[in-house]
Length: 251
Image (cartoon, rainbow, N blue to C red):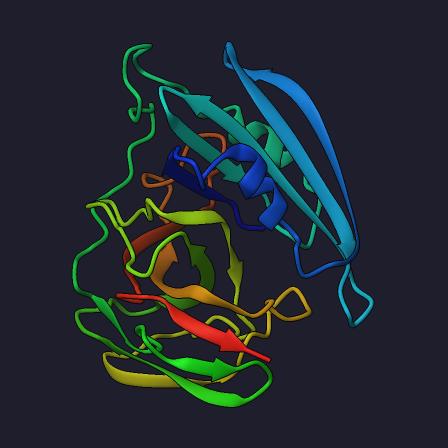
């Protein structure tokens, strides 16, 4: 089970409706439901998207959206299961100030530490969906037992806009896990993984487009002192890197 939290600045192209449209876009017979909820006194929208992959696997996406002071917060659930713990997870987030547009009770660590660097695809490439390529990266100072995960995002411009906490300001929607399984353990130095271009871990392929980027995350199993009290086991992100600019996927 994994969950993600996205913080996006609202503009003409980044809206809740636009983000919802991206969820499960690769699914066949995609179905969507929306429910107005309140979490910790804050109005929110719970969106559930279901459908099947081309391989016939049934998937569920759940995301809670909160819009506050021109900022959109998206708390996303796993695409492969429907866990009741997700409700506990999104209810654990609270705003610390009614006047703050980006401060919550759980702050993210600084993740742009240089521990991981994407070599390819790092922007400017034109890739054919279904072809085989090598994703390459370089790591340093990675602790023993860490793992590497690779996700795909769409952005609203050619260049990736990232803050000090490793969050993407111009990504649309939650990331989609690539067809590359988690690399564990990660070793220091240049590494690579075989990738079928556009393939998703959850099944199916990305649609063609010219504004895709890749996110690489180095993480480890959290100790009890690093995990929330309600979640005694957790994953702690250590470092992230993103493609510097967008690459293109073609049929």
